Length: 152
Image 1 (cartoon, helix red, strand yellow):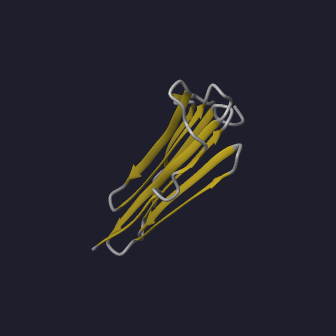
Image 2 (image 1 turned 120 degrees about the horizontal axis):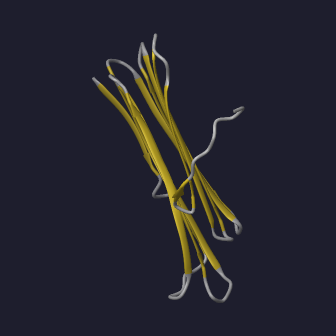
């Protein structure tokens, strides 16, 4: 039996302001996921900011996730978004587990009205008796960033 949960945030695609024909637009986002034998989880987030010649700006953010589990496992997703005049934030989480496997993914995207779009995703898969598999993605204004490990 397949159990699947999904969240797509069309309702959380938030926008503030109006765009013009000669506006400067910055966009970016990140996505990631993990797949095991019986479980999977993935999330994504994306954002955009537009600055108009008259000084006004618009910002928007969207995201979601999906998780699935076979053989009596459980799967869940959650997502939310917040917006004010200066920034929009979006968070997505997805997780699935069965008797001997766990999968989790989470994405956080922040868009600032000053033209900054940052997004990070972390996905993790763990099976009993095995080392975890971790995938990370971090972007700034749509450009993938490399980050060193903490403490090294």
